[in-house]
Length: 293
Image 1 (cartoon, rainbow, N blue to C red):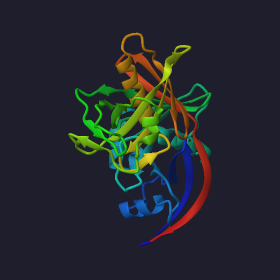
Image 2 (cartoon, helix red, strand yellow; image 1 turned 45 degrees about the horizontal axis):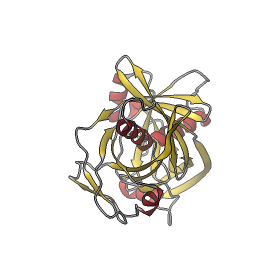
Image 3 (cartoon, helix red, strand yellow; image 1 turned 30 degrees about the vertical axis):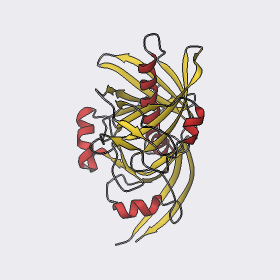
Image 4 (cartoon, one colour; image 1 turned 45 degrees about the vertical axis):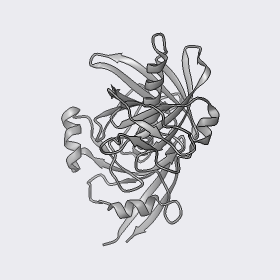
């Protein structure tokens, strides 16, 4: 049975998504349909698909409502290869703007929009750069795998960071190494984590800190999408890893330069432990229509 899909194309620092509204949870795309829509040659093109659905209308939303009854809307996110993902830091900012622009939700300055995800409930606010999302508590994994990447001579150690979805972060020596890494090939991890992971490669600036803000460049290979121009949760994980490497005295505020632009990351204390937030732009580019077989 075919599906008529009214969609919006959006992006956050070049991390791009196809979004559509399905408040009652009636449109369930198959993995094949998701791959077709995200195909950059034959489809719309995107790093993933985001369905705007009420939390009451799908099983995964029950956990979100149990965590926070204000989580009316659920970000149903699927990678470009048709696999489901727990969370997307750039995607949730674009999703918030999509909800607002389509009169599905409101977000006044100083207010909070509560959104359910498979990685837990997330709070979104407006800020000077666009939107800021509290990614919640984070976790430093006990060990990180060795990472082998095409065009880099030897395997590199990594740090494992979980910010609602899994990441491994690799520090490189300089910009030339970062530019040389061929991320059209999936990095090889030893050991390979169950369920896969996102892999970030970072090069700190010299000096690392200017006016109390840490700075570094980053590229990323996203699980299920390949290399993307940006990864929001990856930027947060990379900032946490870089702070970890820098040691005592490292700042809690970071400027992350990705191929698609600049993201901000901040670590801050809460009653339930340290949280990390992500800020950056969210753009809606165009609307369209697809007839899917």
